[in-house]
Amino acid sequence: MNKHSDENAIRELARKLWIDRGRRDGYADQDWLDAERRLQSGAVDESSKQSFPASDPPASHMPDRPPANADAKWQAAAEHPETPVVPVLKPVQEANPRLERAEARAKGR
Figure 1: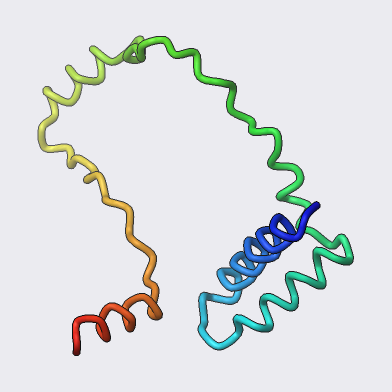
Figure 2: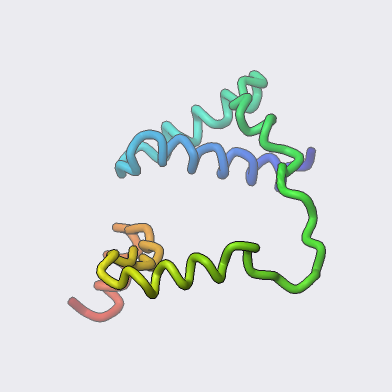
């Protein structure tokens, strides 16, 4: 493993530690040192090892087809319009206080 890939591995693990800590500021150095120590000792999270290879099969590149019972579902939905439709939520962008402060300084606030 070269130095660049070592730093990337440390960075990824340090970010995971930061997320696990609740994304609190002020612990970047500690997270980085903990990540270095864990990677050097070989104490890497076992769940990450078990996640590869990916469990999803490769895409077939065939066109998608609706489910076999799609017509029945559409008809049932039309017959019961009072049933609430679950809204599709947009993904929430992660808050980044450092980025927000930098953007505010750039705008001269």
